[in-house]
Figure (cartoon, rainbow, N blue to C red):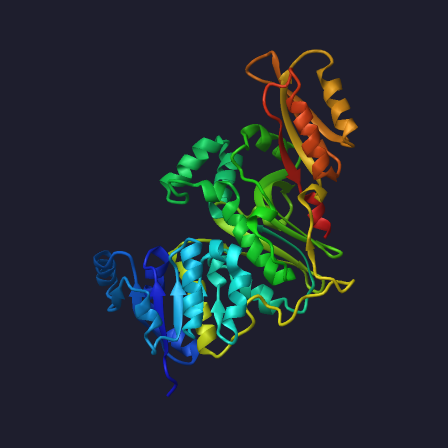
Length: 438
């Protein structure tokens, strides 16, 4: 009979307790698929009494302590699962686990966003699993590492954060303001009391960097890519999007152009007909375009205890089966057509269409001056709406543009903001309908 795979876990919060529960509840099917038993032996927590009460409620017998060394020094433990969150301490623990010659599983996208390339060489022949770090229950890590491994990945676009997607869905379908939709998300438990990481795009940025490493072998940090959130979106933007056949989603976008990789997270107007446009509420969706398979779409729960625990346990099953692929999917550096490694495209060189929202005094000559400034920065207008506001002296001006570079739109909006007849800071959203043709 095969020896069991013995596991220790750090953290018994929502996901950790779901892992413990599923290992017991679905023990039969897990053992059948793994080919041997998976045994959770010890848990490390901050509050032992609280953890013991939770385990008693679940009917699970498990040794609990506050000392990480109790896992590292236990020769029987084969795998350590890290579910504590944070960056620096989690990275320190990952190093200690690997140096103790134990396999490592994590759901910690923030730590991986900064340290995935530091961890990989430490692993050597040890298994590392991080399926749960991106989009909870969607097995997108395995798709990129294994399922699409014969493909050049042309592009990825993903709704990677359920909180932001819920807020934008409420704003579109129920005409809510951003603040009201956020309050609803918090009341329903979809948003934290401090939702900054979700609504700022930071959480989605962490996930996009992990996906980009798997797709392209590119090592980039959050500070090096474009990350914008949804805080500035208003019902006016939703109205324009709806009128011109778009929906607004917070997207993580990766695109390959020659030897450059473009990585960005921001609100985007996309065609209502796009598959990913139909991903609503707290759900996540990821579209991957491969040169062999074309576009494939992955949809499911991006968060939640059991969905995330399902991905954690899928890594354990893979380890139990003896599978141990390279952490980031490449045994040697990926090469582009000119044999140079991929480089990260400068934010200023991003080439897109844009939507612009302006509030300005409604008087003769204003539109002409605005058009002249846009023209001076090589920006041509494709569509335009002018509508009244509650203050009859102020006009709401909504534009969409043809393609231009990020640096051009940035300079133009900075110039427009300084005009005395512009009453609010101009706001932009990128229009991503060209991704349909990747």
